[in-house]
Length: 123
Image (cartoon, rainbow, N blue to C red):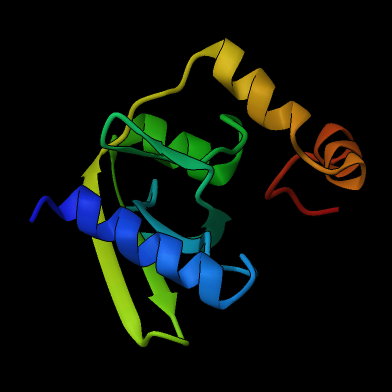
């Protein structure tokens, strides 16, 4: 079976079992500017043409790390099914139009925070 098809099946099952609560949460791992691995949780937006779409600020720590080393990994852990999925590969930028669409889909409070604070910077 195609691994993307299998992932989509498992992802659908997980969303149905948990009313979509946190089923799209995944750990994004990148290579830090210091050469050490860095990980943080992000949300899977969708799968498009066998690509897993996550978003974030290009000026954030993760954005800078990805720009420096265009390889990353995603890890999903679903407690209800006790499944873990690990994906690794090359990272590419989405279009400005796609980024705008994803940003517009965010909750109002999330937009305010994103516009007000530089992600990853101390305040």
